[in-house]
Image (cartoon, rainbow, N blue to C red; front, side):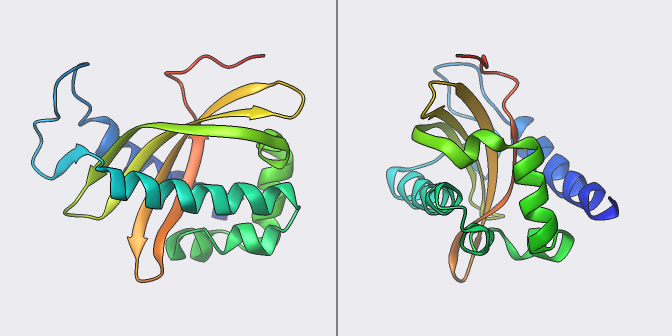
Length: 154
């Protein structure tokens, strides 16, 4: 469990950084460095998420783990990663479709926070808030948490 605490620390720090910079609807963020993602960043981030979701659909946990950021991998091993997904993020194993929205990018830190709404093959709808970081290999996932700003249900 100490690794999960480390993961929570990584996620909460990233989420606080970006969540505290959200602007009212219709206005651009005013905090220097934080801005809505452009189409290129949104597309690249969505590709990373899609690669991981597709791997989950095949129960290819090593493939899904490859999309995790190095900081995440240092805090959480592959076996624990699989346990976390199977215990707390089961809908990710059965995604029929998903969309991304509300992407914010901190260009100074190369961090993104983006919402993801998913629908499972059985019709369950859920929403996650992803945090990603840009590394030499591309965008990698720091973590995902249930999105408190989106309704959950069927």
